[in-house]
Image (tube, rainbow, N blue to C red):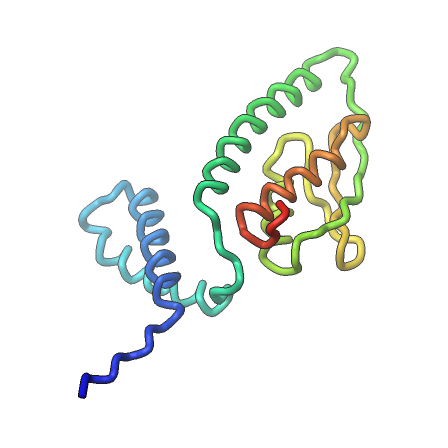
Length: 169
């Protein structure tokens, strides 16, 4: 009779990925000094434990290729939007019309919506400013004459694809 095999813990792969990521971050912050490695291992272990309690592994499956494409998109858009914001700031006429846009969220509540709010705030010219109800995000933008609502919808669809929360994205 073969030995009974233990049932693998579904959190194990997430635990190792999170621990390796946190330890890698520690190495970057400390310039990989050998004297800091022991402290880094303990810090990564503690951070992993806390992160698994606060954000347990769930239905999100990050798609690596979509994440890489999103990273390239963010880099391109950040440079483009940064140049646009600088041009507007330096133009003597200051062609801006700041205001708020209310975006209807289609991502599921929780981490996906929070990530979208952060993503929105990373882009020059837009800042997530709060919520109106459960399903709407208020975004402050530099120029409401621009197609901000369309851009927010496209960015939300890209993030949904990265997180694997919608098949149609």
